[in-house]
Image (tube, rainbow, N blue to C red):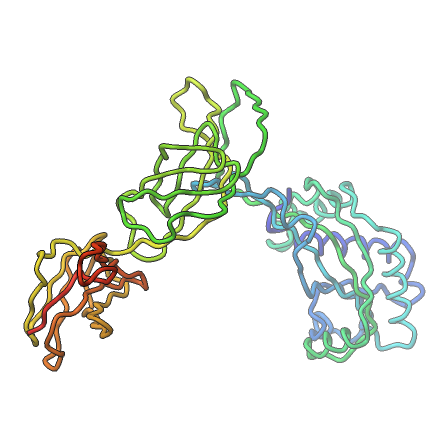
Length: 416
């Protein structure tokens, strides 16, 4: 492919073709002098400031756009580890203005007519034409930048460069010349496509494949329909209900924590909640792995994954004494909790219907301190812990002979 010199090389090749064609067609006899072919911005005057030879045909590259067909070639360019695997080329379309300048009547029209005829008869820049034009630029005494274009490798790129006329509307042409801040001159627009600029960054190549193994397996994507119970404590069992849950290698993902379930059926999986889950809303997902290397130490390959289902892990207050916990107004109530509470989780203590927010914390903790206001009511109250909207459970009296049968009885706190 070509390199970064390709943009200048394309302009130089087209300029050379125009110069040779104007000489070959004897345009000097028609116009009374040999017209010049330039590569100048339209707002630039006569090169050299010579008004004696005002006739010239100017080729100006006014825009480059990405080529839609080549811009996604070579993807992906990086591996999962971030290593560069390929160097996709920079694929560009070049947009030119071919403008005729003259101070004589009909000269501009004649110049532009010959230029357009050449580009019409040269729909493709052939490799021989490119080599011939670029080799002529490296003559001794030529400017340094001009001699450098011979190393553009333009003739070696995969795609040949095609010349296509562009039809610009009067509004587009007006905006273009207004942006150039130059009086309008007789102009034709062309697109040259495509220029492929190759990158030379180092890439990593995979080792040759020594053994090929083909595995054909039926595709049964697991699906979770429901989880039971919806509210559960850490260490309890969770039942996953759904379809196509059973496979040779099944794992259950709880966020970043992955466990292997015990009882697996096609429509039901029972799994014990692992440690490390946070109180509040959690997600569960069933993952089927593929053992493509039986008898090999390689890890199982990624297979199919189910949809994600949500459930709630409730916080628990631990270490409370059997009689109600006592705390005086104006003091701090310290509670041990499980699972550990993160620094960014919202925590509140519910004493009956009144909520006491916890002060900011510096990190994950299993011990929480709640300041009891001085005006808090005196008495014995039910105690609940709320973490990210999930509340700790209350104990219900299940003794039919008890006066508090079927009522919440614990945990409680006594405020004095």
